[in-house]
Length: 249
Image 1 (cartoon, helix red, strand yellow):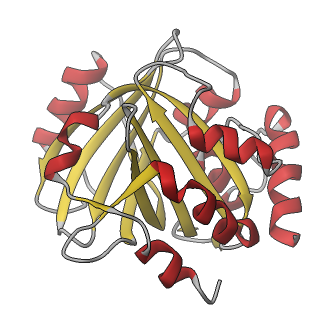
Image 2 (cartoon, helix red, strand yellow; image 1 turned 180 degrees about the horizontal axis):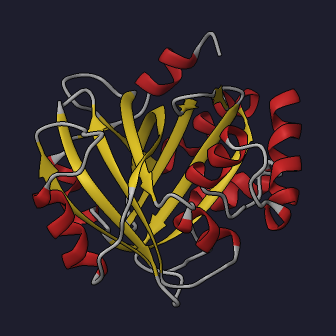
């Protein structure tokens, strides 16, 4: 991707303040995973339809996330077992802006993703009483969780010129826990975020034309599989094969 900087600089900019109308804290998500080799062509094709987030002149923004789960990985297993009304807990640092949040995501039985968050001073590997109280307030029950793994990546954020739609494109993804580490650097993970599902999205249309199809994929679950070799995974075997194929492309 030698011409990558030139390609992303060609997008019309949008500022954080202009994005206020498309925060989409309650939304539907459509995810895609594909080989990084396809990204330059894809970006060129979607350019007429999207503006790209600029913060202090930068378009590629680093994210650091620390995910929490129970000792027996309840959040991972809830996802694996296709349970509805499931949660994820993480700290996330938006590196360029120096802002961090404790974030709780709920995937409900209507396939809506609802994100709640509180601003924090920094990512913490231990939960304070304030953190625990916030988690209880959002989830509605006491749950004993601990820091499990880091997931870091760089992100492009785009906004559709006409429709209420955001698009994130994540690259250079790495993950680690206290014993193991790994990466998906050969893979791009994109996500279309809308108030309600609409296949009229220009990204979805162009992706389909490039044989890039939607896939339900969780960064947390996939990295958990790579970091915990003996974990239950039968329902994720097809996704694992897909990811491994992309890594070798």
